[in-house]
Image (cartoon, rainbow, N blue to C red; front, side, top):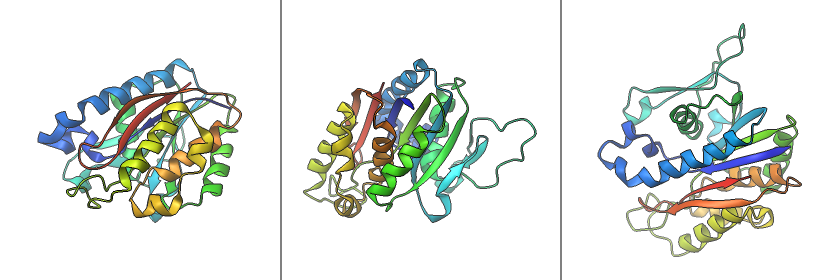
Length: 239
């Protein structure tokens, strides 16, 4: 059963080495992410699963010990998601960017509370399949925690990656409200087509969370909401 969840944004800019001079603009988001990870640790899970959006090459499960790199963003920095069990072969697939950011956050928090593994979620995965995948994750162990990586719309300003779309602010506000109140019905009802048009990569992972939390009776708290680069970012903790 799901006993706790943390929701964090996944821009590589969250990593100061990648952000360079822009780093301070995300200090509040980083701090909120660490607070959310503290909620996960306090829940004493048996396993932690990091879920985030991924392209075709990064979908599916990633075992403990999987490695990610920020070389594609001009930084010689690698991260590891947990530790491989003794005697197991080294994982071959590199983590997608969203899970690499999650692994970086866990390293920053010095996570050692439970084995950590990953799940790359296709950004276009249908809502019903997201909910089903979440239910499967919750059944993995008696006490499961999720670190859910994902961004809101990328269309909040004219300088945003997706340019300005007047619908973006309302979409992000609805998503942040649902994440902050653990409103499973509202998360499940997020419009797939609109999310795609607004380049909201977090939609599918958030709906995986909604599926995992069914029947768990968790409450939510919104720890951060902003759009410093024209992209909607939200941090929430569920327990």
